[in-house]
Image 1 (cartoon, rainbow, N blue to C red):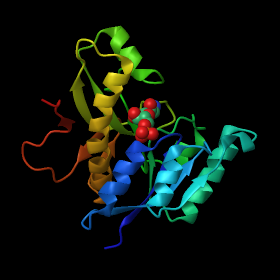
Image 2 (spheres, rainbow, N blue to C red):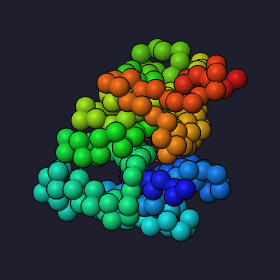
Image 3 (tube, rainbow, N blue to C red):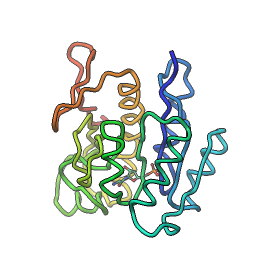
Length: 216
Ligand code: GAR
């Protein structure tokens, strides 16, 4: 069966993108990374993608008069590569409502907190400042409201004494790299059902959980 073509949008180093590329290398994986697009021409992830033989395109947002015209240019590039799923992976540009409407139920994001806690920026510092003992990451469908679309799965990690934002971010990132490829696999297998704010994953083994547990 033809593999689902995934377009990955990044703004920086692209470690989640790299995790998706790595997962897609295994023969049984049902998706392939068709194109990587960055709104930042110097994003390190573009080079990583090129080295993996994947088309990597910079579309600097500064070249466009408004958010929607930039979004339409990105969308045209995704469509040129036959993309059926858009995966935001550290894409730090707020999109116009047009983009999630156009890609409705075909666009995922990974966010480094247990949403709906701590949307937006400086996420790990928000978690530390709030004094939570548990944080993690969330993969969710993207809607017009920032970091608020239907949640597919989450991975949890402890917040440990002595953590600063960087240490916590690194602990969460390891889980991001597990979680995102798994959710993209489910999507590619056609197993995600979105019903309002809730998402069901069909065909999970009995007793399976959509919370990836904390590391020991
Ligand atoms: C990741 O932690 C991702 O969850 C976060 O940016 C980082 C990108 O790292 N995304 C957001 O904060 C989106 N709101 P990466 O470029 O190495 O994948």
